[in-house]
Image (cartoon, rainbow over all chains, first blue to last red; front, side):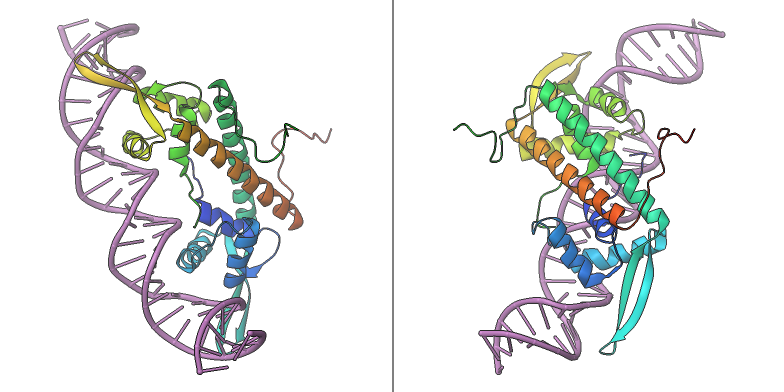
Length: 119
Length: 119
DNA sequence: CCGGCATAGCTCAACCATCGACATATCTAA
DNA sequence: TTAGATATGTCGATGGTTGAGCTATGCCGG
């Protein structure tokens, strides 16, 4: 596709880290909250994504502590991660605008959720 | 990921068909135009995506003609395809808004393109 | 007249991110 | 005491994209 693009789960991981550092499980919960309970990210996706994003330099380990004999790591966005996410959101908006424009040109009338009331 | 999501190339195919029916090659050109020349979609991606979208009922064959002894098919969005794209663009906007909000909370200041001038 | 590029459609192996299932361990509330 | 939340991982399967290759015509410039 020429240009670099994030997959949705990957983008959600970056989004979950955009305001503050978090550890893995907290990211899962945050994603659930962000998406209004609609998206339950799988742990397999999460931990492989975290490894990949570390390698790519989009996130870094913010903090490490041992809890109950187990390592807990907090992750944070790097500057590059912030810029990547910012770029991605610009791309998404442009894509959404374009799709809307074209749907309208094609005569599509969106079914309203629960406003624009008749009565 | 619980919820159904479109990959970027797939979404671009639907977007390219949102205003009017087109045949394969025209979709490639349209995608290039839509993305301001930044995205050159591969034919391998396109034709497999078209097959998949036909099967899923998001597009249909609009028109078929034989040009130079070769079948040329035009594709159009189905109602389901329009609704899927509309739903997707709503999801993208929500995702973009959320990412922006969080980046701001995290203290991210986007590097301006070429406005907000200092002088 | 010939070479190259645009137009046009399609296949296929490889890649890689996600999925779904499994494994493990502690803490807490019913 | 048993189920569910907290917490971190691995691994094979799935599936959309990638990149390369194949075929063929029309057209424009040298």
